[in-house]
Length: 426
Image 1: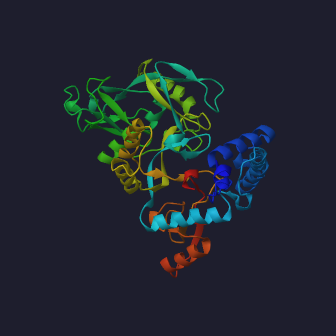
Image 2: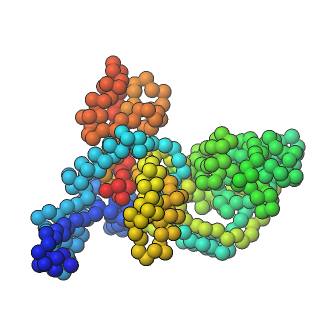
Image 3: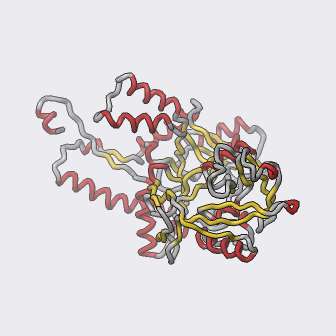
């Protein structure tokens, strides 16, 4: 097409370009070094791992270029570009800085799709949804035996004041270690006498308030009582915000139970803990049974790992203005979608738009142009402890200058955010 247009007298230009393909490339290189040297990227360290990625990119990027030349593609090779070359990198940084100054990029703590193999947040597009009709055994990365899914496990929480027990059910029994409340319907006669009362967590003694959440609970489904784990479920997250509940993360980044899960389970892989929690409930006489249950399971399209909802601090882009403009463009016929039946998909996506999580806990990609200031007199020294200590700048020199202006006469340490940007940010 390009050659024909050029021969027809048009000024047609086809520029060759290579995408760095952040997650996809990192996954391939991680598998390569594990297969060849039995090392993880963390064993190598960031700099050595990135050197490995660049070597891989030079090898296979060259192969792609040779294939395009062999095909006879009419490309202007003098303008070849790469999404992480200097010009493109500067453009990405500039876009981030401008959007931040316009108030469209912000940092927040929210529930994200977490891949425990990659140890990063991933987008909704990178999550494959699998429908399970009943009990199913699935292979999961890092586990020698298949893991059970598609079942509903019931157990009882003891109530305070000798009021008996309340039975709940879940498809992810291991998350009960992070429960902070139990929800019922306000009009359910069975539980009206329990409103404002408390259940007691059997493994840590935590008091779980009985709350009313009519938007979440159906009195006719199951026992009519729902366990609430705000840090590991999207619906529970919203309930937690509404009722000012504690958000207790029970997983490490690689999917093991952390100290919040209690000494009995700490260090266990999450699906090993699944079986251990059931055994512990049986020992306490609180296990009430298991039954088949139809569920939708999220799996990472890159690693095939089971996606874990995790509460994490991330960088987000406000997409509302863009979505409204895109909707108006189609409704006003400024943009025509062909074939027209796909207009409904356009409306569905954009009418239900969510802010875009653009940060990734990877090493290969455009580094987030954000620096964190740790002051000598800060009580909390972990990066990100204070949301107002972030500085967005085009380079470290600019960040240092702003830090001096913002915190005159104070001693500080300046560290760049280790995260990279979602590849689509290019």
